Image 1 (cartoon, rainbow, N blue to C red):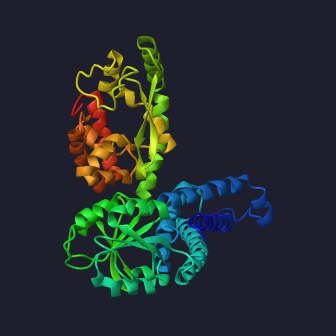
Image 2: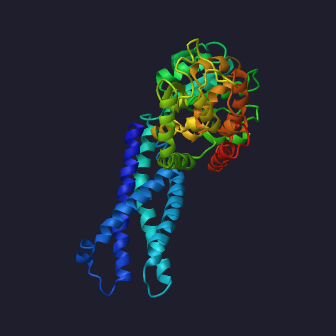
Image 3: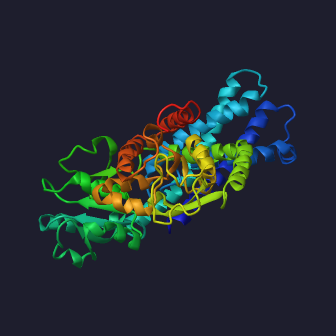
Length: 471
């Protein structure tokens, strides 16, 4: 059972539970509110409100479950956790439905409202949890039998921990981890290859993850070793995987970890980003909504600028360039062309103050950030977000990571049209300035939230229209 198929099962059962709960609740509600004129079969089957409500009800609950992030990690389920998540979602959803629908009913007394609210919650929560529990029980059973799990790589240190590694591997079938091999910080560990394949040195971890489609990395480098934990985890955080480490004598990650277990031993889980699942889904939702709104609102500007570029300069209106996005995936960024067509005939070069390669109309577009407008289409495609680190070309990234490997952490999330670095630092004119701006981008990643996104968008407006901050 792969994750995509499992996710579909959860979605279908949630749709089924919403369908059944609406039918039951509609009957119960009508029997109370319209009790004098209520006829079971004919009135329900001939009531258009029943069918309209059914579609809207199912759509509402699916949207709520999606925004909550419930479908993101179908293997990461547990019975008690399932109970808590389902209870909270059902409670929030029921209250919303109450104020949208039930509050408009004409009832004999206010106690009827409480009865309807309670019945709706009880029906929906019970059905949803029972259906989900059935699937979760099957998943846990398959995990215990070693049939499913996350493709995992083990990061080891020295021969001293050999017995501990054996313990992990001998019982891995009882966990969600399916070990496909190991890498070492220093040298190979003799004997461990009898259990799982050896994939080389830690420096090759990115290639190993990509080649074997690894989803989880377990770091077990021992106690009181002379390893730079900060450097190791920073390198791993640049890869789109779940990171778990054996507790080490470092408090560097104390504020950014959650606790789990492996064979009854404690593990620290390093989250990919600071945002929760529901915040990440909300972020994507308002990215799409705001980008669509911006494209329609700025359509006159779009047409005027396109005409001006075409009339005043030779060459295409738009500029397409390959940039590096989330998880190191390249994409084509869209911009209005602000330079002459032969601007990089001598090789890649960042724009500078009074750059002769910039056209007169291009200088205006860059100063007002109007050249960035086409990137809203990048957002709709899913290559970018409205707020996120500014994307760079691989040419510059290769130079930066030689001395600043933490730059790769910026690839954990989608790049953005605007960013904290953009409003606080501005455009980077050389490699050193990209590195300085990087510190603002890393600060954003460590403190991502919807509130911070809104704040950055307001700051961007201030920079563009009020000419405040960095240009």
